[in-house]
Image 1 (cartoon, rainbow, N blue to C red):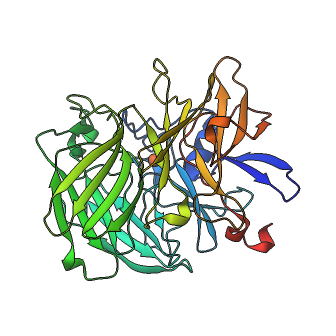
Image 2 (cartoon, rainbow, N blue to C red):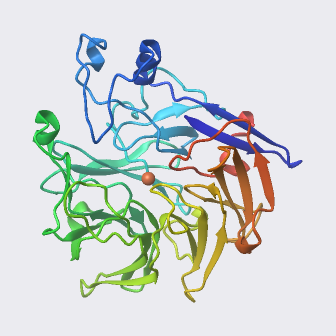
Image 3 (spheres, helix red, strand yellow):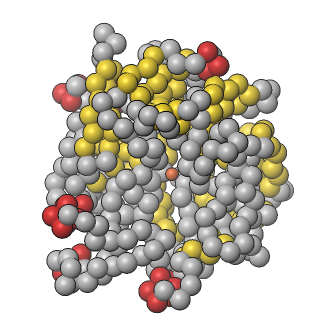
Length: 405
Ligand SMILES: [Fe+2]
């Protein structure tokens, strides 16, 4: 389900939600129950349960993120093709959006370069080619790829980063086991701590033969804030995060981390801004691929369970200073930066949905990005509980076709 908040020039806000009506969602609605199971407990219904085209297939559901690019609103899943929706969140058409069959699927975390309008995407796959990437031009047409990146198995890769010159993919030792998936003989996803973290630095415009690999100690990160070039270094800010695989697990700290990948020496070095468990690192997206000063992460009071966050941390990457806002009983997941109209970089607001753990009442809050400790400057109580979910984005009027407003 997509949840949207619209704010007009008079400061009035409205809320709407809509299900992304994939055929899989329609079949489950008609059946009145779930027909597929989750990714960690896979079950593929047979032709006795679902129509032939969907029998023995994985459920596609665009539930992770939503973007606006090339004039289209696209709801995204982990590896499947996106689903187009309207500016009012209504599902468009009865098949996924594949760029005329050229893109079989894409990640939930494409990176849009604000300097060029280009969108860089990737996809990992259970069968070869295990990892591919592509670029979509600002006009929404496929500009490059999909091109393979040579890896020897299906590694789970949820997010990546771009700089002005490179796309950077972190191949962590988290491997999908297709046999285990089919036979149920073992964990579907396995953490292989004997393998390094391999980092592919791919030139966005140069020949793919210029791809270079770097290695460092294994770690896992679901999400990255941003990357930029600093001399010979590629600088990447992110949250290390606990992984959910069965068996030995990597660094569980969730520490707010800066990695430097030196393209001359091959050295990969790591420093830590804060060692608390954090997630959902974000920047002012107008700086994607360029040098940012600040980024935010969601953090939590001790004792708060998995997937629940109630502290927003704003990190000054130049001074190391950390500002915080504690939301108390109201928990949230991702917090999004919304630029102030006509503002310079990093001046604006932070917005998020959150829910009171005691009453299950949800609201939508706005913080001043320059002073998060002061707490919300606006709060909108919502008529329904908005479940804690995954990702969101703020779209300014410049993102909208005037005809859609
Ligand atoms: Fe994600």
